[in-house]
Amino acid sequence: MPNKDKPSNKRIKVSIRNRKKVLYDGSVFSLSSFNDLGEFSVLPQHANFVSLVKKSVTLNKGTSEEKVFELERGLINVDEDGVQIYVGI
Image (tube, rainbow, N blue to C red; front, side, top):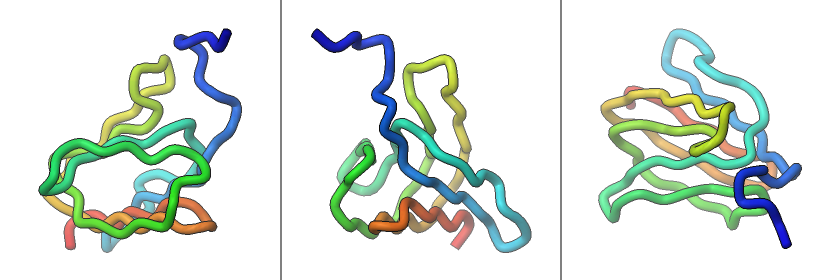
């Protein structure tokens, strides 16, 4: 039986940037954020997806590697290359 406290070893590449610089570039187990429909999560092998995001982006939620990026709004693009988030647009 899988251990709920230990994340999968599969990862997804994530890039978070604003107009001036890259805020994060690396691989994560999961990503969570909010859009007009509520909270959503992106995991490795997620379907292609584009959405406006708001409030925050949380990487590796619920793990010791958790990292939160507060934001007013942004755009998320998920494709076969990973996740790209553009903040402040």
